[in-house]
Image 1 (cartoon, rainbow, N blue to C red):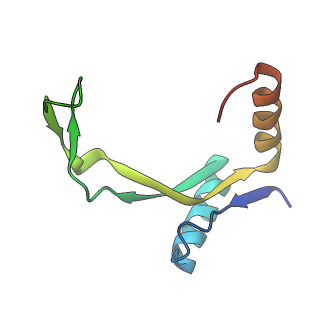
Image 2 (tube, helix red, strand yellow; image 1 turned 90 degrees about the vertical axis):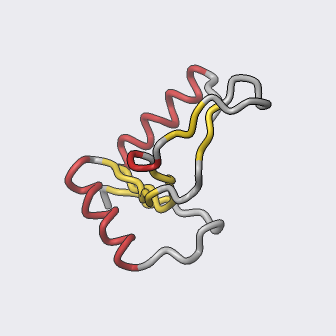
Length: 88
């Protein structure tokens, strides 16, 4: 096995087609994640009180699971996090 698929239980309604697409993309690029177009209106604010602008949705995606990655890459990531005491 060369790839690991990580999925959380917060999004149980992922479809077989979505999983297959993410796996296919990971095989092509080494890693992939399921992304869906953002439906929410996103506002930008410096202080939380006043809106500076509305961010256009056209280029925004929500990241869902599964995340599929080459196992070797995943293990390198775990090692880096441990060695550098990173928060993930």
